[in-house]
Structure formats: C-alpha cells, structure tokens
Image (cartoon, rainbow, N blue to C red; front, side, top):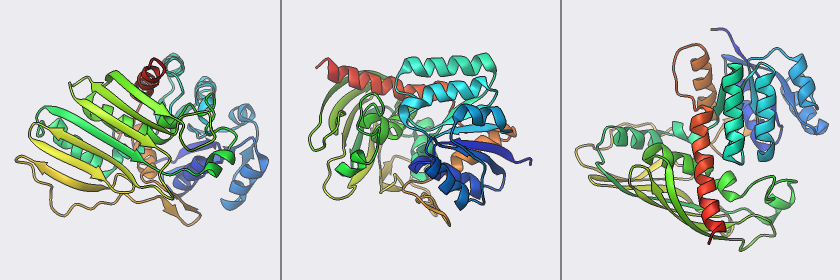
Length: 338
C-alpha cells in the first residue's frame, strides 16, 4: 500500500495528537507541519526528526506534495482553512467542531463538491467499542422504539485552561462549551436517534471569567421520536467526573460511561445479551512522544487511509459532520430565545 501523505496545520494540543498518531501509522507519512508560532512548529519538528515546518499556511499549501491536510487549529479558523486547502487541490480532515455555523459548513461542503476533493470530520468516538455495540443494537432494532436518551457531561476546566489560551472561552473564536466539550457526544446522539428537530435550553456562566457558558441543560426532540436531555458543565470540582449516555428503549436499556465513553455500565436488551469476551480497547492515545486524553484518533486515520485505498467507508464526511453543528445551533438559539 502506498503511504498516504499528510500535512498538519496547528501544533497545539490537538495538533500534537494528530502528529503523533500519523507518525505511528505505518501506512502514512507526514510531509509538513504548520503553526503561526514558530516555536511551537519547531518544537514538533525537532521531536519528529526534523519534519519540514512552516509558519504560513498558504505558503505550505503552495510548496508541499501531500494527499491530506489535517486542520487542527482554533475553531473559528476551520472553515476558511479547509476551503483554502480544498481549493489548493488537497483532501481535508478537519477537527471538531467542523465549523461554528451551519452556513460555514455549507460553504465547506460546496467547495468540496465543486473541486472534487474529499472533506472529512474527526469523529473518533464513533469508533469506541461500547458506542459501536449500541449502534449495532439500535440498527438491528433490538431496542425497539427509542423513548429517551440522556447525556451527562460533568467535567472540570480550571480558569487557567481559558486564561492560557487566546481563543478558549471567547464567543467568536470558540463558540461555546457545546462546540468544545459536547460536540462528540451530540454527534453520537444524532448517529443513534437522527437529527435534533426541536430544543429547549437554559445555560449560564457560573464559575469562570469567560464570554461563553460553562453550564447548561437542554431538552431535545429527535427525528426518531425520542426525547433527550443534555446536561453539560465545566464546573465540576477538581477533575472530570462523568461523561455518559443512557439509552432507554422499548425493549432495552444501555448506559455507556467510563472516563472516555469506554465502558458499558448497564446493558439489558431483550434477546440480545452483551457478547462475551469483548475487548474494551478504547484507551487514551499514548505514544513514545505523546500522551493524550482521548482514544481512537488512530482509527480515524486508518479509516481515512482505507477509504482512499477503496478498502472501506467508515469516514465521516462534511454533510454528516454538519449535523452536530446544526444541533448545537438549535440549542444555542433556544437559549437565546429564552
């Protein structure tokens, strides 16, 4: 198999994860990295055997021979950088959130169709073993009608998390906690239950000096008829407490929890017991040069490479990625409208 050539823009926390995952993937190679902060780019270059690096995105696009550009920059930059890379003739893998508005998502998808270049969105939690078990049960109709879905994101982010960043907690740059902390969870709710068709919401900034909310409660209606609750906060004392999803169906109940949505905490499905001998392998990304806090970015990269080699289709395209942005807009609009 010919190695897929990647270039990564953004050498912050998530960008470093992309660099480490692709460096460890035998069917991939990194041809360049980019960050406007030369020190950040140089540090990663030195760490990975003098990778070519740039501080200007447009200059990088003009000078590299790559297949895929990974966009791992602050949220507000995702749309325009993705569009620029697509127009320059590259496929694009963009981090969550895909963009901060559905209008920007539509622009990105339109350019992808116009240029014939692929646009994918990182949704690594879809690869989690418990998530896939639940998806399989739902797709086979084993739960019957889904009545309710409950999602709790009870996490800690200390004030320094925001103070040390030029964009976190900023309305125009980050968008809000739903984009940063909750978007992967919202993606799973939609994957299982269909689009959010109605939302009610109350949210506040309770414990941080930031422009965006740090706590909220939403009631959601999904396309499949299920009702849902979404509770999110970054105000939990000291450390993350819980990130969980509970599905209540006509013929079964499933709760997925664990620190990284990597445990089945409850499984009671009529005629469909939890298979024996499951290897719950979803653990934080850990490589010799990188220690991360979430799992399965490596599976996102493997799925992308398999798709390019016509060996599978487990990628998430821009139209699918836009659904979680549309849901977040529903929730924030409901909050704004009281």
